[in-house]
Image (tube, rainbow, N blue to C red):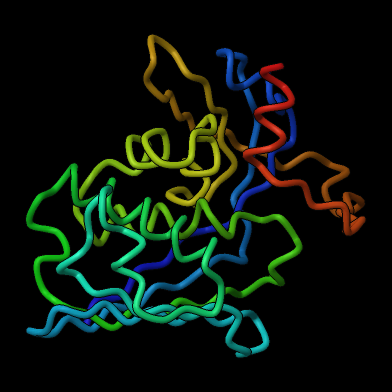
Length: 207
């Protein structure tokens, strides 16, 4: 059995302009996502995702014989959400493209969030980072080839301290940044229940 954990993220400054090389300040959160893998000798990938209250919010079964760009719809044997299954499969195929030995055998995968889905702390980025660790590939490359985004959330997933993040010469530059101001105990974050779709937000910014 293999287990992976990725931190959630909070972008404090530099939202969207970080995509164009601005210096951003971000913090990993104590909340994140676990990914557990039990590999087997079959040709089926079973995937089950649970939220922070141990309730199943997504499930899918994939036939690995059809895991390719041209037959990925056929690869989905069963699922609770077709669109999410296709998105997940896109990420997995990008990981396999980077490492052809990845997903050559079957597996049962279980993921568990420690924060509510609608908090926007990185349901996708924590997943991508853990899949990259499982596949033994670069998580930033996997993000950019499958989901776009700046990559600051991947940096948060991999670090346990505040960071500055910048894209320089098309490469991520991550620097640990101590943050312990005298007013730290008076900082509060309020959830406004206004989570945005990252892909749509980036598309709007680019336009």
